[in-house]
Length: 171
Image 1 (tube, rainbow, N blue to C red):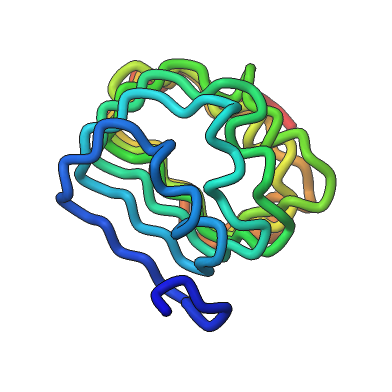
Image 2 (cartoon, helix red, strand yellow):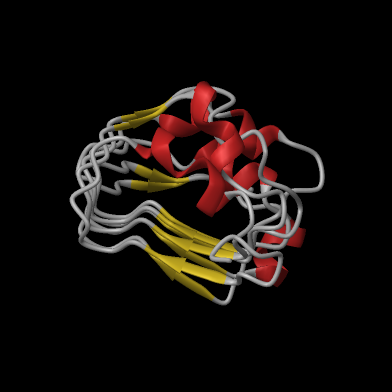
């Protein structure tokens, strides 16, 4: 049975998916879900059940995602460590996305590079006390957000290259 409780990794890279809603059964049991290089343009709250509460990594890179509706990632639990939203068309997803305000959800790695229009990572950095890697290169960031001592101690790798950074805000 394909949907057994032991299903660990689901890779649907390059499958030309345009709507993720048809994946409810697969994503709801996976620990690692790779939906990169498809044609996804948005994530709606009605799709939240496709993301397992046990996900450890979610790769949505190289799609055409322009926005993530609040609640779309609402099923994701505290075990999610890696979120890859790089090379999409995001602008300000974090202002509307409840995921980054959710208690006990602390990522180790977040990849947002190559979105081109993303102007701020402030809410993300502010809410993620266990963040070890942040990649937000090739966007429109104009300032480095203030970093708390907890965040400074946890960060190991930060890539903010190819942005428009003119200021580093004091912490």
